[in-house]
Image (cartoon, rainbow, N blue to C red; front, side):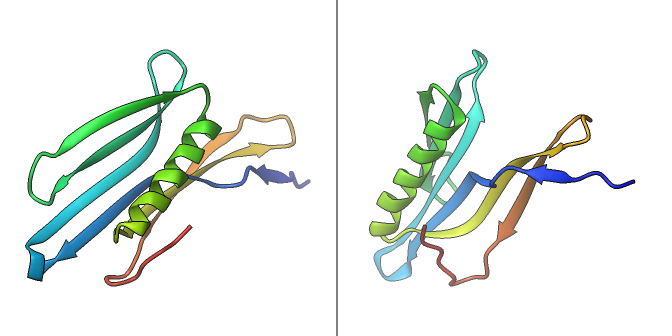
Length: 120
């Protein structure tokens, strides 16, 4: 007796971006993540600054996770145009058992090799 497992399309959950240029003494990071708020909304959390510093943090609230994921992709495009490259990414999806059982949240982290860029 086998049960079919359905998964939703994995969605970007978190990105770590890097922009370094030793000739200009530039060493910056930008982190984008989609998280749920205390009130059931979805939030796009943006953190940025110089590597080794505390940096800054901004929270943008959205009605649902799909809107927040779209905003994450928009920010990725903006930052890619400014020279940032993706150094780590986490995707997540929801895996459900079509046999009527409980579903499970599934996340997968991907560490990209040094010097590798990923463009969405």
